[in-house]
Length: 239
Ligand SMILES: [Zn+2]
Image (cartoon, rainbow, N blue to C red; front, side, top):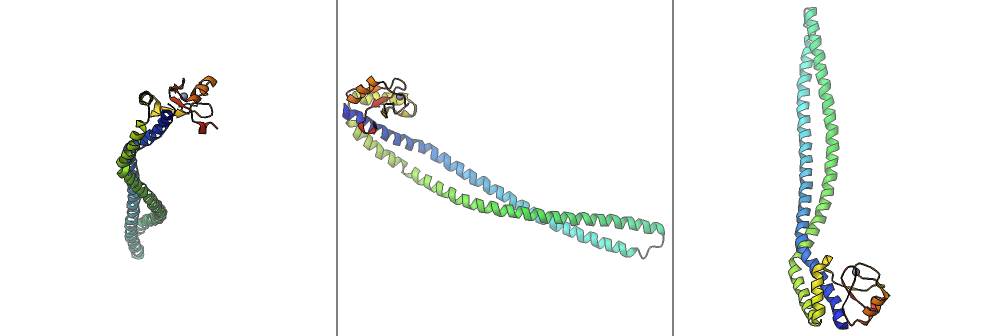
């Protein structure tokens, strides 16, 4: 029985490995998708910033064109001041000159603001781009790693299954069937645990001295009263 009990612990370790691998078959593709969409949205946000930078540039060019037209118009009006004959005409012209002057100021302010916005946004764009390229490298490495692990997962599981079969053959039938039954019932599929410092290695509940004495004999199957897992005495984990 002692051999069987110790082999149950080995079996448990193998089953842990197998369930990690089984889980990775679902989790890795999900993670890959998550990483890809993270990259995609970062790429999109950079694209949007680039578009805004371009819009600012074309907006500024339009304002500069407008400014030129206003300035020429203003100059023509100012030249006409020397040609007017009546006070009324003079006053009207002055009003127009004033209005053109205001529009000129507005355009100039707008252009300055646009230059400032452009500088800010270009700076942000450069920062975003460099952060993106760093993150892109990290993500690509992680994706490659996940893909390569996924590529070998079936083979790895097969390898563990072969080892499992060999160990299974050395376990007495009642112990094995208990193990399999408990495995389906307990959380995380951990059915067999070693006793650690007088406590259950699964739920860490302290075990009674009598149970410890029985466990130490390693001549029968014992279960934790709290979590139902199989308790196995291993001398080396006592201390
Ligand atoms: Zn327990």
